[in-house]
Image 1 (tube, rainbow, N blue to C red):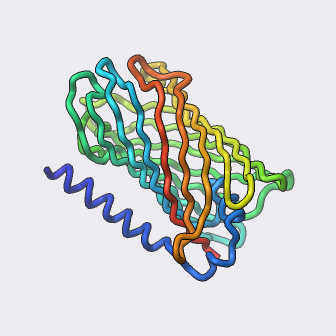
Image 2: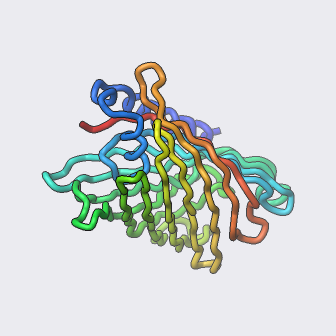
Image 3: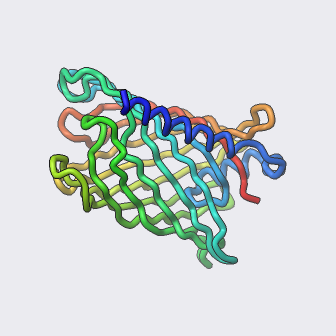
Length: 273
């Protein structure tokens, strides 16, 4: 019961933060295409509050299902004339059923991962947009079958280019090692690789392909999902929002891992200037 209360308190706090990212007069001055371009840039100077729902199917010997809601606010802060600090926090809320065989269902909070990117405000002379900093792994999981009781951290970085023709391409990477926590839980030693390419097709619409791949060095196992997404920026009342949907196919997964999944996203948008 306590775990469920903590989960809902965390979700409520992030939803309140999402309300704070809503409409401002400056937002109306930016077109849907401009906002869509910023959304394709993980270190853009724009506050956003995405709610990302994922469902993965056919997990484990009982063909279980995992439902994951990632609440992931992105908050840029100007720290000098030339640099921004981009704070990105991923808070996973999980409901799963028979994912570990005949294990019943679990609901709760997973391990929260905040990332901090120090990013130059201007691209390089060759047009690259860069960011780098630390990522942390917090022991916030409310169930042993949802996450681990470990503290972790490591480096993270992103590099991308955006062209006049509407293309965005690049990659985001990080590596997390656990350094403290329960000795009964497995160590964390994971590399995350997210190459991505997006094409703006006008009227706030974007087509995106990415791979949120990870390599578990402890078990020497790749997980390679390929996400195919369509998104559109639109105005709802006075609030600019992005709506996205797509499918996911696993090119590589652990034994009894998922075969495929879906993703739906709603993102509240607010510029910083």
